[in-house]
Length: 115
Image (cartoon, rainbow, N blue to C red):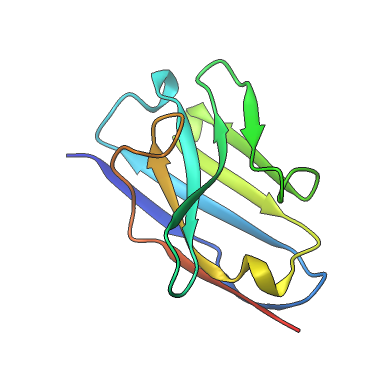
């Protein structure tokens, strides 16, 4: 059974940082492209970043330069380092399988950025 468990969310002030983690199990993490997606209140799910099994990463334009995606295959864990956070980044963040995050995803972790 695929399981994805996110952690690391919280309340932070504008300009602050958070590091999200996603512990994966039940599938071959090492050979799977992974993504982070988010959903802000009243808005659709939004893809924000992906990392291929080979390590190549890609980002939504509005987070590029502020967010960094990484993975530790030995720990089956996906990360998202978020710096210079803005109120517009407030959302529930999910890790998801696939290069566009369209596969199974976890329960999410709430990130709230105050102004």
